[in-house]
Image (cartoon, rainbow, N blue to C red; front, side):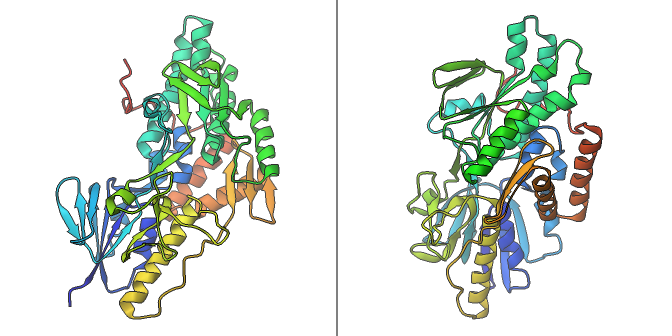
Length: 421
């Protein structure tokens, strides 16, 4: 009998969890990703703000499965799915047959119909995004040092972060720390402490997924760091010279987008319905409505909880879904009883505010300040892959804590989103 072939598209948290969960199961696995590395996205903003190096939060996928001969890794991009012939269609023209298919293709940032803003306000989903933002961030200070007028200098020293979810809050806090604590002794013609950091949120409060009291604490903590929090007014224009918030224009040469996401086109590949963010609407068993052998998980999937709310697009949810799907596949292969419907287990919300404060929401238990920051740090170190990465990140954070210096402040590759001129 031909070995059951499982194709997993996407090497993020969900996809890798499927592969991990199928260890010692009599299946052949093909893992397809358009990049050769798995990325620990929750710490991506620390690469963008010079706290960590890229190699500390990313690992080659092939290395992860070098001792798993049943796993084949392909570096390629998927362009569609032929459901009738049970094939994944690669953009290069090749096809990969499957018995079971798992789509865990993630999401990208969305600009709510203003796609032209992307070149001026990059989002933060990939290593390329992080290094682009880091380059713009550091070059802004360098160009402020050379500026001939106060107006030009202030434009380079103004940073706008659009979107006040965890990524936006963490980015704004780290930029403020960088400008006020790390850089001042190194510049002669400009006082980096005069940096202006704006955090813009169209909704009524920061961290909308957190409780009201933690949201209010976060706003106060950001303001103590010098961040200006603008709530209740959306961005209406975005150019290379600045942003317009409502009717007010702010000259700013560095803008970061953290306001929304759009799922990969998995629903289009499969010809099924999707929600407003493009997430494929799947059954409680995480398979698509008319095919029990095609699963969609992670940020690509719209899954409803028992309370009627969608499962959040966070790493723990993707990992839980990946483990669940692996269990379903294993049960089918080994002839065991089918698992009950997927049930998301909320493990809490965490977000940092600068280098020494955070908020943690575990339901009945809520924490703020330094204690929450330690819990946040320990949790992230725990979920990193491999002892080397855990030690490297722990050492980088300890170095920053003791010396006040960031170790990844090199301006290297050329701009990836637009010509520098």
